[in-house]
Structures are given as C-alpha cells and as structure tokens.
Amino acid sequence: MKVPGNTAIRGFARAQRVHGRRAALLPAAYRTILPLVILFLGLSPFARADDFWKQKPPSQWSHTEALKLLRRSPWAKVEVVVFLRPENQASYSIPTGTRHCDPDAIEPNGNCMQKGRVEAPVDSSRQPDGAPRLTPSTAFLVRWESAVPVSEAFARLEELGERTLAAFQGQAPRIPTDRYVITVKLEQPGFAGFDPFAVTPAAGNPDLRATLKTRRGTVAPLEIEFSGTGASSAVHFFFPRTLDGVPLLGPGPDAAEFNLRGVNFAVRSKFTLDPEFLH
Image 1 (spheres, rainbow, N blue to C red):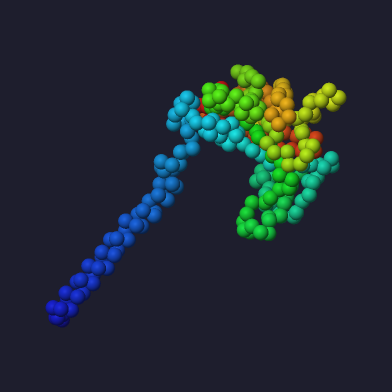
Image 2: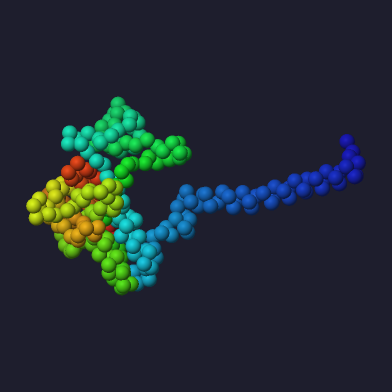
C-alpha cells in the first residue's frame, strides 16, 4: 500500500516530536530517579555530611559543631523521662497496643510487656501520624563520655573561649582508661522541684541504679560521681570495660544500652559504638 508523500512527511514529523518529548523526559526522569538510587545505595555525598568529625580536625570545628557533639550526636542523646508510681505502674496510660512499645518488650502473643510506659494521646490539632506529646515534658541528656570526639569537643569549646558553656554541659571530671564513663544531665525539668541529682547534707546522694548492657552481658557501675550545681549538675557512672575477663564491647562496631532508675523515674538510652572513636 502506498502512502501519500504529504501524509508520510506529517507522520515523520509527528514521530520526531514524540521522540523529542521522550528524549526530553529521560533526563528529567534520571534527575528524579538517580538521586533516589544513590541514596538507597548509600552513595550520596550528603549522606555523611553531618559527620564533620570525620571530615576535619577538631581545630576547625565551629562552636555549633562542638556543641552538637556534646548534645546531639552518636554519643549524646536526649531521652524522655518515664515517671513511675511506687507500685511500678505508669503515671498514666492510654491503651495503644504495641504502639510506642520497645520491640524487645513485645511477647510472642503480641502483648507489650514494657512496664512503666508513659503513653500520651496525639494532639488533636496535629496530623494523625504526629509524635505523641508527653506532659510534663521532661528529658535527660545521656552522653557516652568515653569517646574521643566528645573529649575533643570539650577542648574545642575551651579554645573558643566558651568555658562557661562547656561547664554547663556537665563534663565528666575524669576518663579512666579502664572504665566506660556515661554522664547524665537533666536537660529539661518539666516541672518545678524535679531535681533528681541533688546532693544534700540531710539526704546525701540520691538513690540511683544504673546498668550498662551489651550482647556480652550486663554490668553495674563501679563508681558514681556527682558534679556541678543547679542547672549544671550531672551524675557520672563509671562502668567496667570487661565482664568475666571478656571485653564488654567487641572489636568492631557494637551496641550498648544504658538504663537508669531513680526515685519514681526511669530513663533508657541506646548507643551504636564504633571502636575507632572510643578511648
């Protein structure tokens, strides 16, 4: 079958326009898909942009970067406080099944066995998937002091003339080579009168019970030391580095869980630790 010349030309031109549109779409598609592929493969140049301690020496850290290491980093975490009744029940609870329950505390039947949970409803003015708001808002700063970048961050703040700010962060008074030191500082009281680390002549030191758990076992602190006063007060726990003669942490990246119980409150913090950055 013969096709008229003008029809063939129009068809060829139309095909070229379609091909041109497809060709134009391809770069746009690549621009959209390629970053996602890179992100999932962990190849993005921005994936570790916040790990400035790996990219430049401490002498080049800014004030903000040094402070971030002490407050929001792999070795410093702000943890919400769980308030407990004397009978070890939650101060208040809303039935939510396994929502907000630690995965390790879910039994085979699907029930949450975590004691002392503080459950709070999602604010009705926020999106349904918003994070639950706890009232009162009380939190601790938990910091793994036996990390080289943490010590370097304190030193950097001193270099920058921020001695008062450094002192406010509750630095551990010492870092023994045979101990792992964890510092806990009240980040936000939440309500007046909550001072869990107050040391008084009448009552002495507060009753605090802490543990450090790794896959090799659980240890208690060998020493507990208090420092600072008022808003800068902190408590420091000195844990052994071995359990029955075996290192508490493995030679490669490892995980540790810190638990602290005081009078009617509890806090827990999990760390993923790289031995390259430990003392």
